[in-house]
Structure formats: C-alpha cells, structure tokens
Image (cartoon, rainbow, N blue to C red):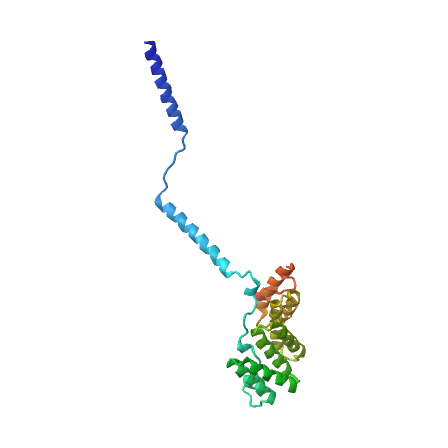
Length: 227
C-alpha cells in the first residue's frame, strides 16, 4: 500500500512539472498570410527608393562636369543671329568655322578661328574666335590649350555677358579636368555671378567643389533665385 501511495505521488509530481513547463512556453500565434505579403512589399519599396536616390543623386565630380560642348554654344557672326545682311570677313570666317565643326572637320575649324585671331584682333571677333577655339580643344580633351583659349576670350570680351559667361563656365570645367580645383572654383564662381544660363549648373558645381575642397560656406550664393 505504501508503494502504491509513493507511485501515485511520483505520477502527480510528473504531471505538475509538465504543466509548469507548458505554462511558461510563449504563446506563438501564426500571422495571417497577407501580413507577410505586406511586409515583403514594404521592404521592396524601401529598397527601390534607396536605389532611386543612389542613381539620381550625383556624387562623383564627373557627374557635374561638362563632358562634351554642343556646337550650338559656338559664337558665329551677329549678322546671322540677327538676320542682318552686313557680314564682315571676320564674320564669314567664324561662320565657316562653325560649318566645319558641324561637318566634323575640327582641324579646319581651328585654322579658321586662328585666322580670325591673327588677322582681326578686335572685338567682338577676338573673344568669339578664342571661345570657339577653346570649345573645339575641350571636346578633343586638349584641356591645357583650351584653358588658355578660354582665358583669352574672357580677357578680351568687352560688351557681351554671354561670351564672358561661356568663357568662365567652360574654363572652370577645363580646369577641373586637369585637377586645378581651386582655380576652377574661382572661374565657375565668375560664371555664377553673371546670372545667365549656366547659373544653376554653376551653383551645383560650386557646391561640389566647395565640398571637395573643405569649404562649405555658401553665404555668397543667392540660393533663393535658384529654387
């Protein structure tokens, strides 16, 4: 009888221990399948958003720099633009240089622009010819020679903000290509101050240059006009 009582006590103890163990186990409930689908969709959306910003947000310097200057940036005779019949010999040479570039004959265009420079050293022909020469050299990756041409154009121009802005803008881009970031920043800033067609890209390039040079003070920039 004593053995029976002991056996009963042991069995009862085992039952109690099993119940205690089962009571401390966390209750795991299965989530509905749509919950998992929604979570997966949210993760995919976040990844896509991150990738979008990574693609569209320029971070490298070459994403800010002009890769190739279009022929439309070349300076031709004022008569052509104004539909004026008064065309000088220098005007004709500028126009022929433009036609040569459009035709893919860059060497011929350089000869024509050099002829303007050597024979018609007066404004506005000198600044136009030097600007055009710089553009051709820039597109051929002859940055050192392009820099000299753009500087000459900027120094010679008298009454054309457009030519001056182009000269400084492309000068800054050429300087970046040879690693002269400090001088490039000064040139791009001159283009920015003229408030012309390159103002917004000049501002973005200035921010990148300032960041790379460790100068992030934009107080001199009129950012309100860039919104």
